[in-house]
Image (cartoon, rainbow, N blue to C red; front, side, top):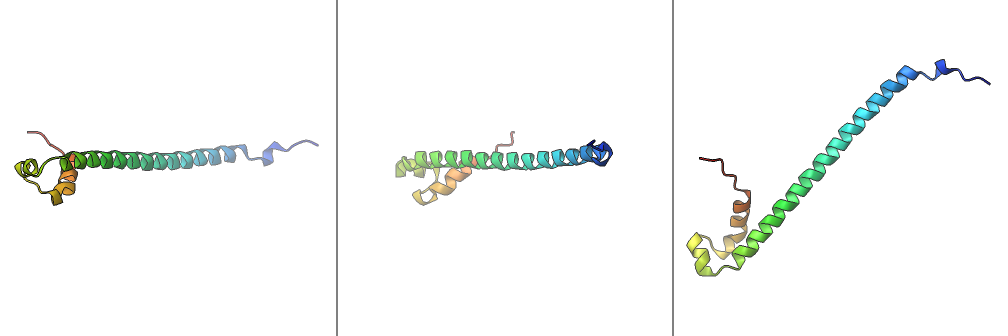
Length: 88
């Protein structure tokens, strides 16, 4: 029995394959973006935690010299890590 290749629809197959590849690329880019944002947030949270640790080890006198209290350590640590200097 011979196969009728005209029924396969080769041109249509390539269009579908191209569409599927575009969909896969879009899905992959979305996943990569999500992973990147998650890792960026993880790194930021680690930096904030380290900054809090450093500030908590300081004495009350040292904290007073830089103008913060023990209750403001978390807020100040977030500020220090997230502050973006825009130049002079």
